[in-house]
Amino acid sequence: MSSKTSSEADRLKVLLQESSSLLRKIKPPKKRKKVKPKFTWRQRDAMGRIVSQRSRPSTSQDTELDNLIQLLEEPVIEQDLTNVEQQDWATQQHISSQKWEEARPQLLENYLKLERCVPRFCQHCHNSEAVIRCRDCLPLQYFCGACDLECHRRYALHNRCSMNGFFSPIPPSTVIGEELTHQHHMKPLPLELPQTICGCPVVPSVVCSKPVVLITMKELYCGGCAKTWTPDLSSVQNSGYWPANQQLSLLYDEEVFQMFETLKLVAPGSSRLALMRVLNMKTAAYGRTGTVCGDTFQRSYNEWAICHYTVSKLCVEEPFTCPACHPDMLAVAVDGNRKLYRFKNLESISEDSGYFKGVFICKDEDVASFVDDIQSKTHHAGFQAAKEKARKSCETLDEEGLEVAVCRHGVLLKALNMFRGEMMAYPLKLQVDLASHHPSFFCMDVTCKYTPYLKKVCNACPE
Image (tube, rainbow, N blue to C red; front, side):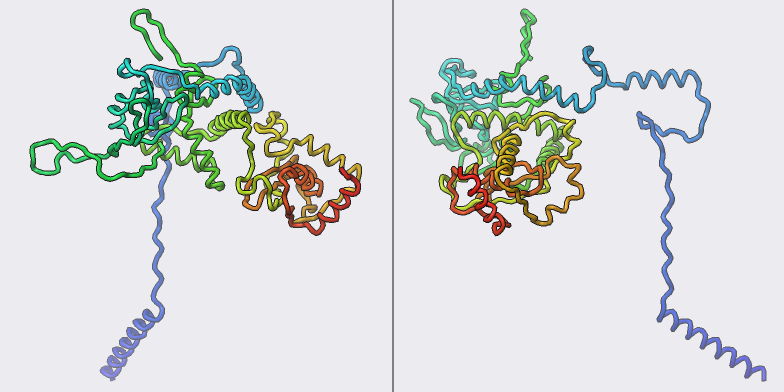
């Protein structure tokens, strides 16, 4: 009887083991989650030392030593005694605008003098007349033909200009020969060369083989009388730089502005922030420190663009014209952009007018007088495009957007600020201003409603 009981117990144990293994195969056990180790923050002082969390009584010697260390670590700031009180942001912007406005005539005058080519002697041999200017070789930027050939054989990528009554850019492979003739001369591309290319003891010489196209971006003291010379604004501009402030403590190379202007033309979606990131990355890549301030760059670039626009205006160049459509345009398209708005509370921050007032965006007073004149002679009508009349937050807006006119190639022609939503008097104002371009078609998204309104206005205003 006992042997039979023991055999049944063993059999039951085997069945239990098989059922357990089968259960593990069908439903494997859950893995335990790994518990992340806990960590604590350690506070450090200005010197990088760990600050003890336990409070201990400080002695007078420790307090005096900490005060001395803090006094030595504080930067020395030169304060203007005439304006010690801290100014708010609006006052600082107003003072900055006044200083830029005062310096604008001198900036324009110096900019116009840049292209004046004055006869000079070569700053290297001091014998021959200079025929080449190279700002990359500052301060010795003027060369005769022989000195230019000798120096720029090593610096083939320098940007040079010929001096033949005016400064004209020339390619790196061009040199100035006798009688001021332009000659083609092959120059080696700057490359890291091996010390030896074979087992010969002769040092290898550099020769030009095939042409390569490379696209890159690239105080005086007298010991006798102790007299010093500090560069002024005119000297800074003559060297190819543009000031970022009136103290001349920060300068920009004009090539950066030219690159930014070209980038906005060929890639309109590129932002100023993207350019700042590129410049900061290049700064770090070349082992330098510091960052480029976007607001300072934008302000300085605007002043540079103003000088460019003034020079273009003196040369009777028309901005915002399409070369493919000029002088007679086939079609002009007009539509509103409600994303370019401005809040009313921003009026108190800056009372300065725009840089290019009336050039692209029509003057607000001209638009207001035109709208009032139309409304006084005919019943005003508005249209609802994309539910423009469903205004829930327009009470807080001053300018609700822009009404923009473009040609069929997408070139911007004219625009105006919208203050009362999209009403039909705004595209009518643009149509009147662009009548000198003689467009054959005037396109809108609500032309079916604009055409009856235009006929009504023409009957009430034959002029």
